[in-house]
Length: 105
Image 1 (cartoon, rainbow, N blue to C red):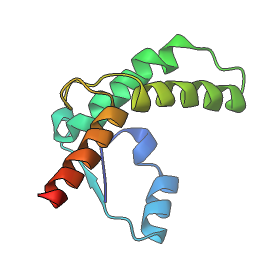
Image 2 (cartoon, rainbow, N blue to C red):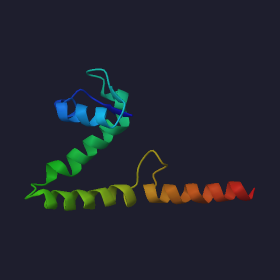
Image 3 (spheres, helix red, strand yellow):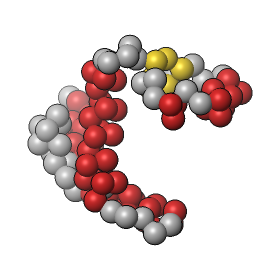
Image 4 (cartoon, one colour):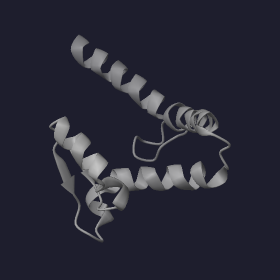
């Protein structure tokens, strides 16, 4: 299932045909209620503020390269507040270690 706002980029005929052709359920949040999709709205804001608004892209390859660098930093090196101030990689590793300890006990 995809949950999105009612923005024009997500209500176009092309998106609706893609979604229908692949049998993907699509739910729209209530207008003016971004917190109904808070995790995505938070991520989109960070991506926009920290990456997209900071660069002028010369072409699609340039955009992909810069976004890939940002994504690597966001996913592997930057501490996040929700997983106890750990990076996602550290949190995942801790989770794996915790699971191993739980199995041993």
